[in-house]
Length: 223
Length: 121
Image (cartoon, rainbow over all chains, first blue to last red; front, side, top):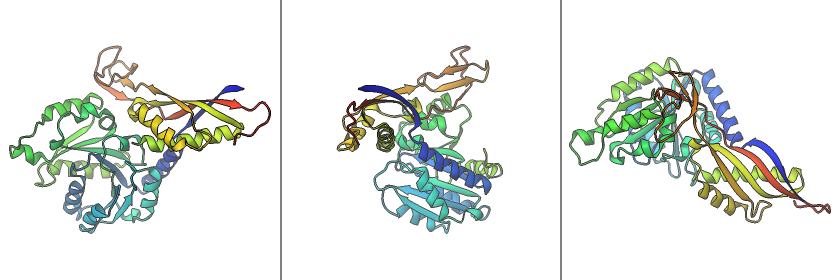
């Protein structure tokens, strides 16, 4: 005999429960937590090392590094003397809230004003998984082309900040098809309030506005 | 390929429900917000692969993508957001806020129960 049964159960319920626990844990300590999402090679780790080095006299920053394999990124972060925990996802294309939960236990969160979570390089999958972060920051480098906000709307719709990295390539006159106005228009189409900072983590161009935003947000970690 | 993690969670949920009712699952219907970017083909493929040898082997999935909802900041109207050309369907304004996304939900399972008391699990 066949019958239909209504279930109405959340499929990612367990991930959401951990995300909620992480978010309460961070809110109690007034720690700002930013989930950094981008394609591989957009320059997330370089942005983080420069940001940590240039703000280290003013605020204490910790990092949770997500990668499929290796400790390479965590080692780059530790060279700045900031505490870093590496999570290896062993093939998974995104971080989940339970992984972030155990990483938070290994960081001196009470001493940190800001935690960056560097998600696995991927513009699609990480956007579907809440980690308990305060906000998402999407990074796009000019070498990837200006059609990304139109092609991958979800992550641009859900992010508080868009960092457009490797601006030095445009300034240097590299042959890159990148219309920055198109990126801004497409990113704001679903998200009018997204903050957009064109930067070069290599030369330091434009980084001061990003730092101002970070320092302002640390005072109000609810965003 | 975040579909694999979704498939694993789905398999656990369908198996648990079926076991509770001592029945074999035939098909399942799930729903999710369109911004989850779930690819139907990838989800069915992942589910089929991990369901082999379990009570969920052969279960047919159907996936309903719920449109993203927005609320207009000018006229206050809630509306379905057309991702390629998003604007308020009431007044045409492009100043709106995206509302919370519909979660991934296992809506319904179709089950076959044994009339002679045979256990499926």
